[in-house]
Length: 354
Image (cartoon, rainbow, N blue to C red):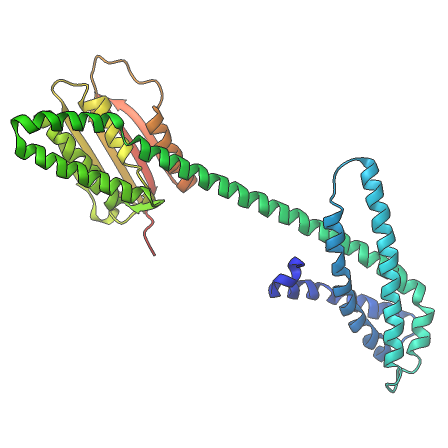
């Protein structure tokens, strides 16, 4: 189906575009000595018929796409020229037929003779209008290709994000899982109660992570709950070496953000911070709202003798890419080391479920 016929709004705009042509045709007729009745009676139905008759250019243009060799364009030009002459002559013939049909109306008796004398002019005008319709059809085809390319690009981006999310789910730090199972195995012999507690926590964490992984956006509240479930398990592993502080503004909890965005940050803080220090340290998670933006921050201590990190690791790069992919220039990602503390800061707009 022609795209103009698929939308009432587009069809209305297209027909409205023929109004100046109708006035132009009537003005030409008046300049040749036609009276107002004759000019109006012929111009309006003739332009309306041309509007639908010349829609056929769409199908010719789809069959003869632009581009290719000069020889190909020459062949296309011959096809367009022949079609224009044919359709221009057909349109002039319709004008003559229409004049014969209107001749019985008082005041229009001379219309067939006037149209007969103007047939060469009408044919030429029809050729020009047909070629203009060809140009319009090519413009519409170019727009259609652009929209299709944008749609495919959006689909590719969505697939990439889904693949990234699947990779994150598959990645749910295998080392953490192995360490948790090893700790669980050791606890069963010395502290069965804590072993049972760890089993429950591990089951809750896996259930939450799988549930969140099926969605593209979640509330910060749910990300925090998942991080707390994860850190509760790590608390059992590290004991007094791990201290947690949570500073969460209630206004920030409903904020939407990409799924599993906070989880890699706390995993990174444990792996490269707490686990690397014999004495452990404080892992701090802060979420506040400031001027319509959420500021989410994760702080952890670093070994003062360890070499400074060179750039971002894979996990942090993924977090930055997914954050900026969702919010663009409205978001900010920062990672820095200062006074023995590694700090990752995410700033993004406060958006909630409608």
